[in-house]
Image 1 (tube, rainbow, N blue to C red):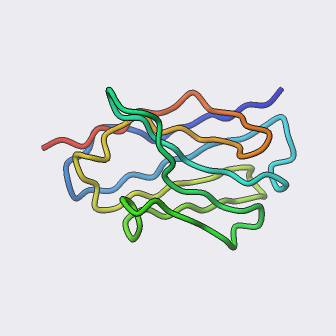
Image 2 (cartoon, helix red, strand yellow; image 1 turned 90 degrees about the vertical axis):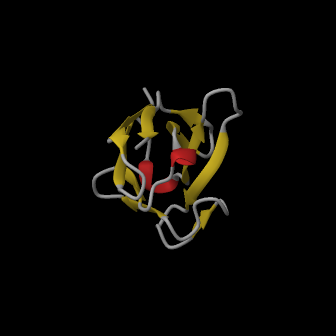
Length: 114
């Protein structure tokens, strides 16, 4: 069955970096657009970034543009999110999503705190 497993979250200080990974299985990964979303405590889940099937087209939310980079490796069925210059406002659970048909991972916690 379809599985999306996120990893790489943790506790970091402001200004530091993290690299999230989402390992996909159970479907033809190279035929699926992928995205990262996040949900902070008390807030709705919000879109962060997405990438097309080949990895050549990426889009970012204004709040992370220039700091986050989404990429994918179709040989390893993995999508990554590199997060630089992290801020306390980036604290959230980060979710990997297959765009269509929609499928979500279980999420990984990212906490940015002095």
